[in-house]
Image (cartoon, rainbow, N blue to C red; front, side, top):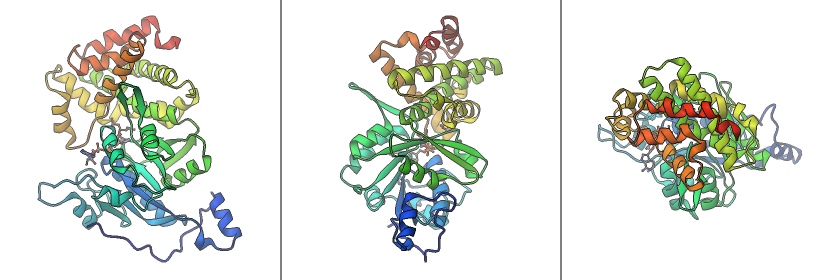
Length: 391
Ligand SMILES: NC(=O)c1ccc[n+]([C@@H]2O[C@H](COP(=O)([O-])OP(=O)(O)OC[C@H]3O[C@@H](n4cnc5c(N)ncnc54)[C@H](O)[C@@H]3O)[C@@H](O)[C@H]2O)c1
Ligand SMILES: O=P(O)(O)OC[C@H](O)CO
């Protein structure tokens, strides 16, 4: 049973320099203590989910419009010691499996019961590997509060016969909640030790809600800005994982920095072209935010997708991604291989195969149809014919 945290006497600051409409109305009515307070639940507790918990928990303690307690749903696991992961997190304040050595904040409460974890929350943060979200949403239908707002930190999409659907749309359509996204150059382990980075929130219409999310996540070492382009931000975060796989192949083949830079450039062009074909409303400027070029760079230099793809290329494709993922990531999950397959399905469905040689080739290498070296031969046609560049 997950413990419950009583909020201590509230002497938190009203939100300092960034006064919200909610604060102004509370102050002018002379009852600051009666302003609406938001309750946050994080759905997910992997590497990034745990860092998100740390960021948020440090802010809910400080900001008057949030309850102190941050509930974190944990996909329950039994550790090698025989103990439950949830119990250990609550005893030690540390996610010993996915973020060892980092204190999350005493106001983080791990909860293995999904329905109980979300039932009182009006700010829901979704941060699981994307392949689990359909099942999670099914379990949550009718279980969340009517006034809930959501944000997705999940880099991925799903593809069905009817076509592709972004994870924020899945959440929005299945649960009937407005869903923003947060993406950026955010390797979780670096943010966990408070190294400076930036992130981008994408929102649809309600800027006030977006600014509430900005306040919930921002710290002096984690600078967050908001742009009105949900699809652009989410597609940047999603598609960069495919380019990261390509960058890993280049590293595994020891092709050097120029080749890797070329792959990143071609990848960025395909990301932009694909995003705009899917959603013509996507803004060019989004690709210059943290979620765009910055995330592409960090993921191609230091991400998990790159790391496992490098190992795959070094074995000449003889060991599977599943095997390498299990060996190298200890329970953490890759998004790039499944996203490459999902993008490939979209290319097939829409007849776009010729337009995206890099995306297409990444998938064909992942499934063993082509050798890792094909990444340069095939993606090179993007330079030769400048296909994605014409879009
Ligand atoms: N780790 C990063 O640096 C980072 C940074 C930015 C964004 N992201 C994105 O955040 C999302 C979550 O990644 P992460 O790094 O927090 O997770 P992770 O890869 O570290 O961990 C995997 C998680 O999946 C859970 N899980 C395993 N089986 C499950 C099941 N059947 N149902 C539900 N959950 C299950 C595990 O308990 C664990 O919490 C991904 O979309 C990822 O791309 C990750
Ligand atoms: O480790 P990766 O490859 O999943 O990338 C992590 C983050 O998405 C980088 O922003």
